[in-house]
Length: 206
Image 1 (cartoon, rainbow, N blue to C red):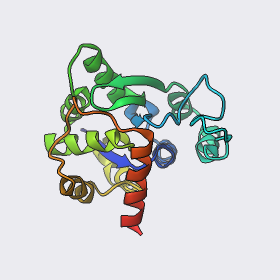
Image 2: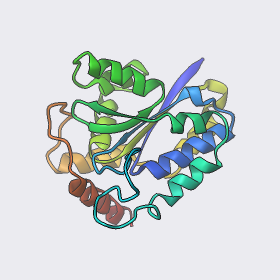
Image 3: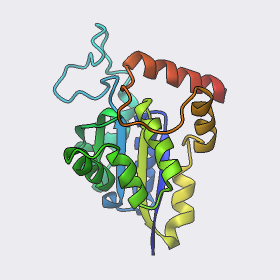
Image 4: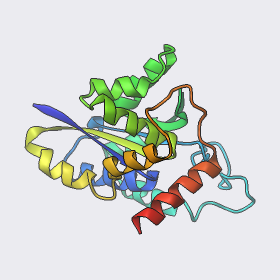
C-alpha cells in the first residue's frame, strides 16, 4: 500500500535538499513532486544571474541550490532540470515539477480555481491541511509531496520532517492575521511581502 507525505518548507533550497535525501534513501524521483512560489522571481531560466534586477549578481545566493542539484544523480537531477513555470489561481507564478504539479496544472488549465487544493485532497491530504499548504506556497513557501510504500513510511517521514514547517503552528499564525482559508481569487504576494513573511517566521523560530 502506498501513502502520500506532504510537507511545506520556507524556501526552495531546503526542499531540494530533502528531495536529494529521499532519492538517496531509494525513493524514485517519479514519486516526488514540488511546487514552489516564484513570486520573487528567484527562478528565471533565460535571465541573467541578476534575478531580482537589483544590479547585484545573485549567483552566490543560489549557490546552495546549484550545489545540491549538481551533486544529484539520476532521477531527482532530471526532475529538477525539468522544472517549469506555471501560473496557478491564487498562487500566482510557481516553479513546479512532478506528478502533483501536473495534476494541479491540468486543473488550472481547465479553469478550475484551487487546482492545487483538489490535487492534494485527491492524494489523501485533508481539505483543512490542503488549504494551509496552498496558503504557504502563496506566501513564498515550497510544497513537497512524496508517495511511499508503507514499509518506507517511517524512514521517509524522518527525512521530509527535517527543516519542514510545523503546519499547525503556521496555521495558527495565519489565522491570527485574519486568514480563514485559501482563496484562489486573492491577490498574489509580492517579492517584498514574501521577504517580510520569511523574516517573520525566522524571528518566531529563533
